[in-house]
Image (cartoon, rainbow, N blue to C red):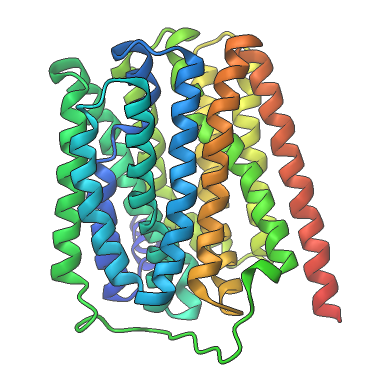
Length: 402
């Protein structure tokens, strides 16, 4: 036990204090985003919208996310990550509080759209800041620490969110979301002031390449879009599946989602430290992660046993733990070739595109074809993503030989 404990502690060593501060800010911000996993339930059960309406609203969520990621990357290259992160957190907090007072279909569409533009400008700025605050040999583990903070917040958020819904209604979630974003912004102002923060690695590049002309990176981005199509089902159709097919209530759904975050907090950092010693490339690790996430949806069709839901969540969690840190690290490595904000914005945009189309298509699919067919379609999309990553491996191998 002592050896396991020492290995766990050692997996965190060598990271800069700025990375730890950024992780703390992310933890507080993420702990409050408990509305998101329950958004589809809130829209259908509390406001009475149809599945098709929810799909359109979630598409507005994704479209705002896409524009926000692009805008965040552009502003980060112009003004630096600190200002972008600070303004994003403060305005997001205010908008979350306002969102609860919107009840009509079009007002919610507009509110979600504007909220996500502001909120997701934070993401590329965070990636660029993380790149600057991390030594080259620590980048994957730095990303993993940020993910640990995200999932520590995510593990607490849904569990607390389910209890809040049961006792105070959905309105309380919006207040917690808003206040937590404001608190994270205040901490950013106090702890990560650029006058005090130490840059570990600058990325001087006198002739930066355009991310839009980097063909291997585009193959990677498209594969991430397909990965996102599969993964984001856990934020829209999967909670409905748990409720409609498996008969789980909000508290049980929150606890199941919290298990995902808890396992990531405990196991992801040691797992990544171990995998970094293996001979597999970052792309190969992403491919394995996508395979596991795809399988997590596919097996839901194999049995009516309630335990299959837990097994599916375990597979998704393992796949997520492997795919995300190594995909982040690949994108950051590639960003050294050009403008970091541009590269990391494209990475964020890949998941924004998935949010635009995956939620809507998933809702339409379950409304017209049922859950079983929807999971088979998601598995097919995951397979396409795996094939693209195989192609990317060949392209990268060929370029190194040349």
